[in-house]
Length: 197
View 1 (cartoon, rainbow, N blue to C red):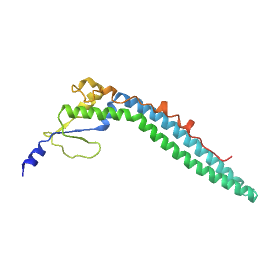
View 2: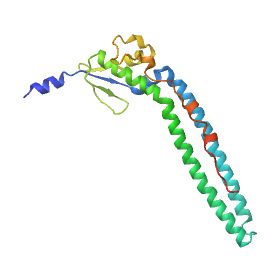
View 3: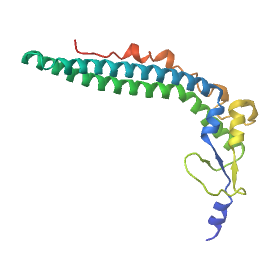
View 4: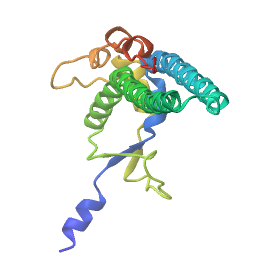
């Protein structure tokens, strides 16, 4: 009855910091810069949109006492339409930015995941724990191996891994270059804000 417990206690596993390994991926810094530029553009567009809405609202408040009833109702409808369009515009930009982020960072994630697979295979580890995901107060060093350094070496210098992947794909070619900036037009070009005329 004790044999399964003894065997389980002898199973070797790895632990690592995913964020540290990810930052070591050469393409990751470029993806991060591209994402930050896209986010800045989206933030500016949202700010411009909100300023336009605020100007229209202030003009509405200033003139509402002088508007005849039909004009007042028309302006109220226009203002409500602008508010609705502004919400849709902001939501579309956030959705587009999220898709662009996924597209930009996916290759780096693929490189880390493949390096993890190869390092675990090379060290004959049963599994690996991402210490960024949970707080571990203690990991037994006789059973657990800190593989963060191995992974960083693998993503920086793929030839540092001697074992070949079963699929024969070199680590550098594990993920294609990010193409979000090529395939996804800049948000301001693809999402138009339809203000009330």
